[in-house]
Image (cartoon, rainbow, N blue to C red; front, top):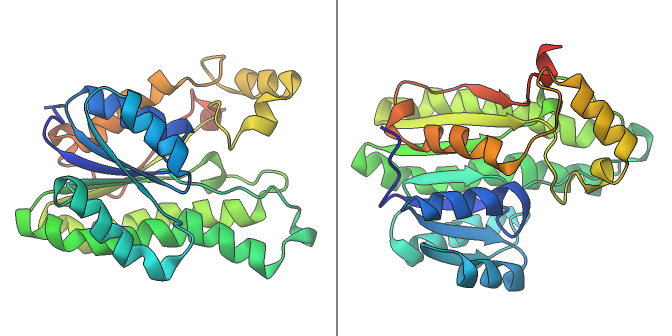
Length: 247
């Protein structure tokens, strides 16, 4: 039920952090994984040192007009994509008073617009085979406000509703759409949080489990949503946060 072997999976934001860790896990479990991000050197190093069938595409996902071409390049690696995981993120950490139109638009483009338009480009091939998986990355800020998080929170709130709307549009064709909302995991995006031991511990104490997350904690939920085990799950947001939002 949880088998992903032979599936072709595109993962954005895979030059580091959650995207890269999930790419390594899924490739080790037999998937054909295409990593997509801006940093070609980091992608190349990952592809050359990761077990399994991997490829990479260096692309600026914030350039929305180019995403059709990016999707075509991705399909050129292993063929049409079965599963799209949108893990790329941008969090400018600006107070509402200091957010400029440029910062706002960049944040929406990476976190909200790119996942939609990449999915839109890949859905026709998924429809042809009556099978597909779309996994978006939401956030704790999809549900609650954080300091200096208005642009990011607005985008991640949008991801939850976009995921529901994707499910409504495409699930009748065998394509499920779900989102994962991680708690606090050590990544480049959360580096400012983990650089402050007191803040990191405060976040750990907020969870029901009593610790922050590790990449291993995300691997199972991601593989579940990639597999036939989740065939009747669509339009949902799964909070993988150790119970942070339960308290």
